Image 1 (cartoon, rainbow, N blue to C red):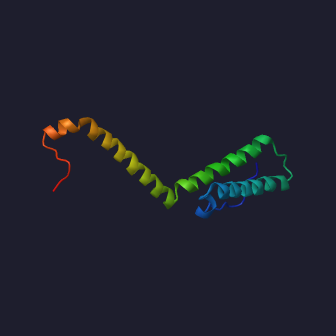
Image 2 (cartoon, rainbow, N blue to C red; image 1 turned 135 degrees about the horizontal axis):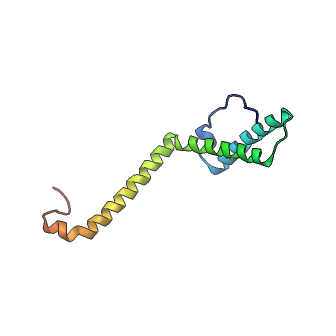
Image 3 (cartoon, helix red, strand yellow; image 1 turned 180 degrees about the vertical axis):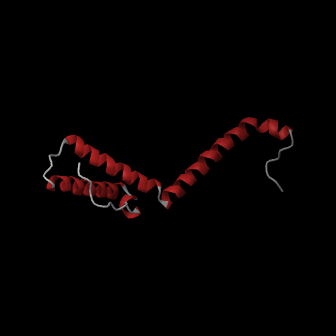
Length: 106
């Protein structure tokens, strides 16, 4: 497959919703496939799938590396960790209270 021109990274505006994500990937995949076709190379279904998969991976990386994704993941982690700790406290609360742990600090 012919290498394409320098690629532009996905912007946050292209990937922050599923409809925009689909449009952006579709547009980029079509442009790449048309570029191959313009070179008069035969295009196989495998090549089309490869282009789509490649664009999908690039879009996912753009989402993962965005500040909004990091913030959302941090909130998810905070909630998950807090829930797990709450479960542990409830499980061992009687024992901890007998050792002097109080409900709220002064």
